[in-house]
Image 1 (cartoon, rainbow, N blue to C red):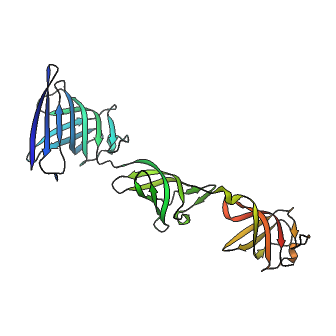
Image 2 (image 1 turned 30 degrees about the vertical axis):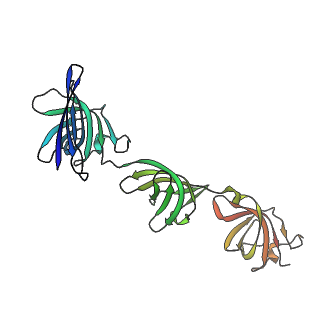
Image 3 (image 1 turned 90 degrees about the vertical axis):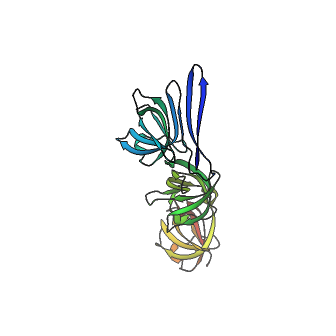
Length: 295
């Protein structure tokens, strides 16, 4: 049940007429308002777009429980169209069935409300550009999505299309490479307010640079590419197997640091080497020397 309230105010020498549809129940769906000032300035809230003509003319209604008012809205090149949460849009995005607020001026005429719109706000345009940052709380590689704890919306679902790469330092990774606790520096894309979901166009993840500092590694030799330098070794260090690249000038040594040949290195030997993990691949190390601790 609704109550129709008529207001009349004196503004200067003119009369300001306001027709407001007020809900009696707190559970009423919407309140519609229609305001026309004496100078022809028009504003209305919660108008329903019934039909579009092209991309810039809209046939709308302001509805009451048992009646309605037809209003034709004419948009122009200077008409500002905004989404529900303030992002600029265009008349082409306004759809039939959308609920809009309109500001403008009465167009000359007789018997029909025709409005030259200066501003249109579409309450059902709920998707807009957004950039978020925060912490990964969980990741689903199969679904191509992760949950992001962030200050803007709390916890948001981030969808990462297959065409979008996730940048972590110098590496491109996938959703399967994300873990709870990873820090998302930025993720940009289209945010849907109705589902609290952001479809990402770019994702940047914090990379701890300290892991790329050169240091000693020790592990079990799994393979050697040859007996002369440059050479490539495969070494299992704890739970990680690295590909180790030795340049042509790398010292090849015994346990006592005496020079030797790679020909004496045997699969299964414990080797120690000094090098740095590559920024582009965490499974690769550029080493500057190697020692076989087995002899």
